[in-house]
Image (cartoon, rainbow, N blue to C red):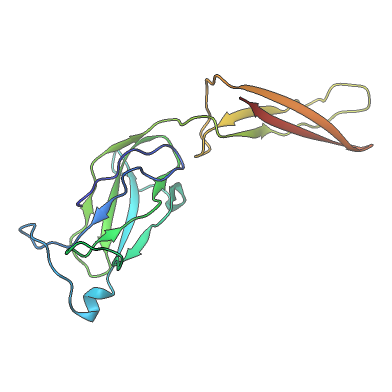
Length: 177
């Protein structure tokens, strides 16, 4: 790994994307010349700090890349563009190749809750009758781009309602900045 992943917020791409090159056991760059090697792909998987494999859906962006043909460097790079992690926690990335080279792990990195991004209705309202409060009140949460609950925010939340038909009501939560 010539560039470790760094600088990410939940659900957003790393500010510093991981870059992988193929080396020999001594760490020396190996030029890729044969058609078989040119077809090589590198795949990334997410592991938590304890070493447990996480679900693939928790990664965003490129998860499998082929040799970068846009590189102007002498090395042939496998660049993971727009790669990000949705949940908060401490993780590492494991890179493996289609050619059976030894896999390699990134350094540990930590994702913390990001800034408010959207609102999520975590409990739908229901059970109401005319001129009375709903039996089940809605619960609306502020979440970051990775869908993680933001516990404290300087922004306010405004909830408006709109009657669509005599029997239906639209609840429209918005973040007030």
